[in-house]
Amino acid sequence: MGLRSKLGLIFVLVSSLAILVLCVAVYGQAQRSREDRIRGFADERIRSAAETYDLNDVLLFGSRLDDPDLPPQLRDSVLSGKRATFRTGSPNAKMWAAVGVKDGQILSIAQDYDVKDPSMTALRRALIIGGIGTVGLVVLASVVAAGSLSRRIVAVAGTARRIAAGDLDASAAAAAGKGHDEVQALATALDTMASSLRGQLEAERRFTADVAHDLRTPVTGLLTAAELLPPGRPSELVRDRAKVLRRLVEDLLEIARFDSGVEQADLEHVGLGAFVGSAVGRLRMQQSLAPDSVVVHRVGREETISTDSRRIERILANLIVNGLRHGKPPIEVTVNGRTIEVVDHGNGYPEELIAEGPRRFRSGMAERGVGHGLGLTIAAGHAKVLGAELTFGTALSGGACARLVLPESP
Figure 1 (cartoon, helix red, strand yellow):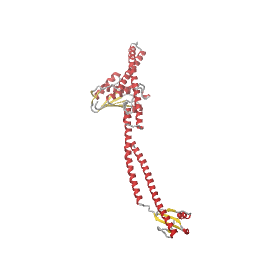
Figure 2 (spheres, one colour):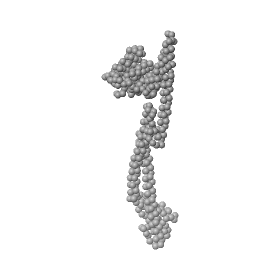
Figure 3 (cartoon, helix red, strand yellow):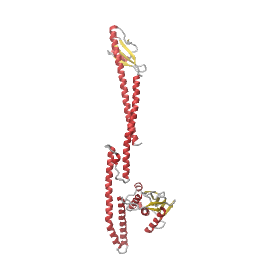
């Protein structure tokens, strides 16, 4: 049940209860007022009848002496020296009035007390119709009020999802509309959080770009100096670590370009199946891979799309290298229409990566090896530039499965 339905139901229940209590109170008060009027009328008649009887021995208004049907409660009150009234219950309800007269006798008058009084029936009908009408108006007003509140909360939730998707310039306060209530306070807090997050991300982006840029020159000099070292195992280790450091710096620079939002795709028409086959062939040569370490499968007809082939090759290379480094060969690359799947036969991606996507400097589970976690981050960055969808999951065989779905139009 949504917030609108819950609020509407609460309003209806509370208002219905309040109207019911009010109607019962009004009807009860009307009943008491009617009884008081009849009781006062009976008391006035018995007083007049007693005065006339004491003076002239004449019975007025149908009064009777020592009526055997006189209620015992009323008889006791009169014998104690009081003039009293008493109403008997249904059926045949009557309003009795009695008083003591001369010679110790009791003079009494009894008149019918009509429980089904037309005026009370009309009042009851009016209260029921008015109560139902009021509940209907309350329902309408509650639906409008709850709908307005629900729309504002849904708008704030939509803005929160946009912020979570990366649109840190989205304003929750603007989506919540004008007001000074709790929804506006929540929206303001959300905007404050987004502003703080935006500042942190900008500081992180600048730090990454500055560090990578400042390291580029000394790393290049280090690599040049390493090439001048005499042959030997120590020299090979130094040159290998220097190359790793250079790749790290290049990756950081590439991530900094993604963070700045300046990357754009160079579009060209590409036959996807043939291109993936040639790209995997080039990767085998560059990485000196065995022919059976990476296998390409083409399913269905060849699809020609407009995309950036360089970025697709970069995504493929990062996914395949990640599979070879952290999984087990063979790496199976399947092209089906506009979809490319890269599957290894290792232990699979960690649940955290599948749920949240890749993060820089997080290499995943220990059993998948060590690393800086930048390869998948860069692949996701290129996919975003292409407008493609890159998701990570588990293959049917249990290994890691990365699926790249390219858009129909760039």
